[in-house]
Image 1 (cartoon, rainbow, N blue to C red):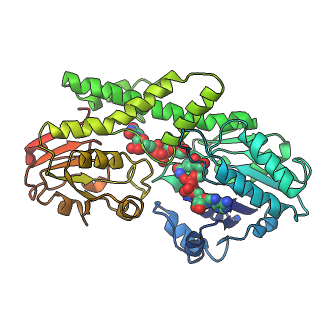
Image 2 (cartoon, protein in one colour):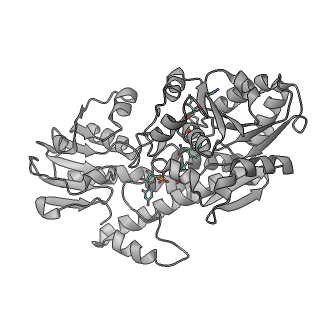
Image 3 (cartoon, rainbow, N blue to C red):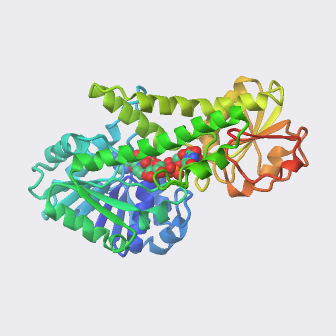
Length: 430
Ligand SMILES: NC(=O)c1ccc[n+]([C@@H]2O[C@H](COP(=O)([O-])OP(=O)(O)OC[C@H]3O[C@@H](n4cnc5c(N)ncnc54)[C@H](O)[C@@H]3O)[C@@H](O)[C@H]2O)c1
Ligand SMILES: O=c1ccn([C@@H]2O[C@H](COP(=O)(O)OP(=O)(O)O[C@H]3O[C@H](CO)[C@@H](O)[C@H](O)[C@H]3O)[C@@H](O)[C@H]2O)c(=O)[nH]1
């Protein structure tokens, strides 16, 4: 199929490369020329396992990128992978969705044959039908059902394992109003749907939109619950990991998403939980549990710094922060817990030296922290009076602490540590 993807960020780029892999002909429509140039040069604009080689293989043949929306006319289906950020008040900011839908509608005004527009971005119930569809109708000069059809197909991939998650998902959710739209999406995802492990959910648009938020709200709540239990375990001098490993043996609970520590960050959980809370309030429902889920999450970085302060006098101390990305396997630093840890350390007049295998450049560009950056974990630890682990990169397993001035490590992520090599080793929840 000929597929256009509007927005070529973490999701749009990954999906484009994967759909090219599935033998579709794909064009990315993106306003950032650097991203367009990177894809056309066969390079990945982001760090994601398995992406670089796929882009290198398909660029110039079945995968290309452009800033020109007119190219959507040569495609059968457009996937909207535009950002849906959080406004200052926590609500969903639909400005990029509106702008992209306007440009897409303008381009489709001159298209003769049928076209399916699929919202893949995470949007609150009603957005596809009440916001995107009317804009498309106005700008394309037609009505939905008359040449243009619309569907909602949320995406569940995770950063760090995005390619694998997209190609081997637990489920594919198709929200559509017509059989034609569903049939087109089934064809688009045929090789993925043929897998025995892929569950296919066909539903209405509104349910598809809400499934995505419910999914993320559930997972974020699970991690916050695990963190609350972890904090309680720490007070009792018990190891939360041992406790929750046993709890996870109950099929109804499952052992996944049971890692307690610094909490959840990233581009999705924080903004999606904020959006569903704001949306619920708009519907006159007080989401008290989700409020608490965020409250617990916000506290974890401070708890980590407090724990460190029990062993190191922070003012003037040199503190190594290991890990900057919001999770391992990605250079994405959006709402990374490491950033809260750094802010909290700086507030207490510590001198921070940070290291991350891939995310240093992003932090340098986006934050003007008065901190040092090291080229390796070993270099960050050299001369440090204390260290914290903010991201569980596997290269932090079995670190050497020989160069530290004070061998104190507070671990927010439960890495593999030779505790004997340290004077003090404290886990945040164990
Ligand atoms: N990142 C994830 O892990 C993930 C997973 C599932 C779903 N989602 C959802 O997918 C959507 C996209 O997320 P993302 O992380 O890829 O965002 P992103 O910010 O990384 O990428 C969005 C891209 O869209 C481009 N863009 C903005 N306005 C545009 C326009 N008018 N026309 C063309 N391009 C435009 C931006 O330049 C950017 O490259 C969001 O709704 C997000 O919630 C994200
Ligand atoms: O047991 C756990 C699991 C995760 N996390 C943290 O939770 C955050 C999110 O992790 P993860 O869900 O693996 O990464 P994301 O890429 O943010 O993926 C989530 O958000 C995406 C965007 O909506 C969805 O598509 C995915 O299904 C959903 O898992 C990270 O900070 C992790 O460190 C924990 O603290 N403990």
